[in-house]
Length: 135
Length: 135
Image (cartoon, rainbow over all chains, first blue to last red; front, top):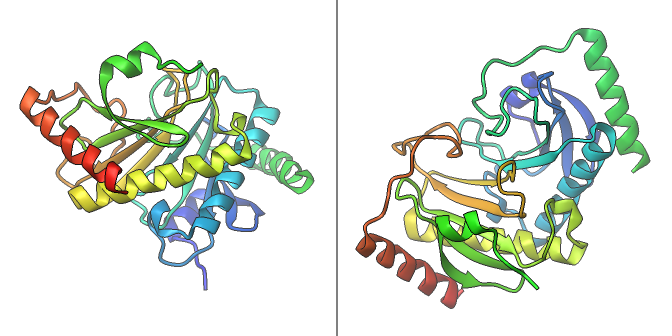
């Protein structure tokens, strides 16, 4: 039985379900920002996953990184599993640009979210869903 | 031919050589902070590694996370691959505590490093080397 932490659910929109993880987009226009959540109840740390799940996780992170690179041509991908505030294991995969609001610092704690309009969110969600569906 | 980026070399001390990565400790007393650097020249992103190397990487990250947890009993492990400043692919694995200087924010950009004394650095390096040697 897997359920998404309420903070993750409210901050994101759903993009795709992969073998291990569900893929979410953070509703922050400042960055093309995906979050992968392994569908395993009660796991907080990567070392608590089984080796098979870890192998899946890094391939799914790599896929998210590849698709963000293809769609948005960032100068760098940032990957992070922090969980200091939301304990459910989740991995951020973020496309970074030299003119984004946090560059070259980390995105976490970089100030208030920039909200997508409904149309903007629908557009990026659609592009990302298509990319994951084709992958 | 693998060489360590000069910034990584100067900010760290060497702990261990694993199959894929060399393990370094960041010389910042604020956090038990390891950095894993895959010994592959010219790689900047996780998706540029081969699948076999990615599988090794996440197992080595998981080992680092397990050993930090065993030695320091943190409340959370933080893992990150950013590379906005130092392009060589490197993965941070950091033990976090509710009373550390950045909690609950990320360690990156959390202010000036706290320097170890020579004796303190020698002690933590020795504990970590022994833990990796036994693993």
